Image (cartoon, rainbow, N blue to C red):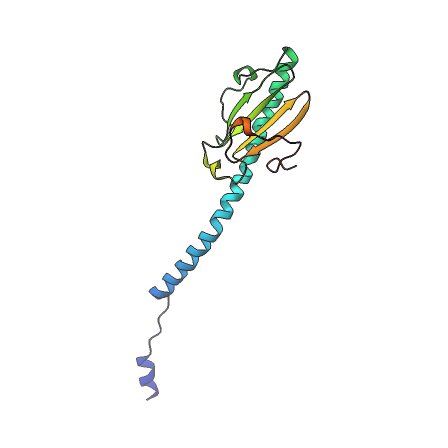
Length: 155
């Protein structure tokens, strides 16, 4: 009799289809919750690319100004061969040049940085030696509000 019970019992190893589907649903929920936060961190990290590109532009502008009577309005004069940042996430521009200052802008609206919360466009303004920073999600270059510090330009 004891032998009969052992014959009818079969042990299976592995997962049932239902268990596999439940595990996949749980994994999909976790990914859906984590992905936006992860992408936000990636975009925030890419802001350093804009800062680096604008810093390099500032250095070249100061080098240009030391040999000329005013700042230039063209990137080619500053030995910047491409108008994009090294990773291609920001387009660089320089405007408002005069003998005392200029505005340099890094615009990420043509890349995946478009979804950045507040820092799609980042700018630095040099005016008589004073440096101020600005940023916005979507604004015209003339709408940038410059201040000594800015949320996108964390120190």
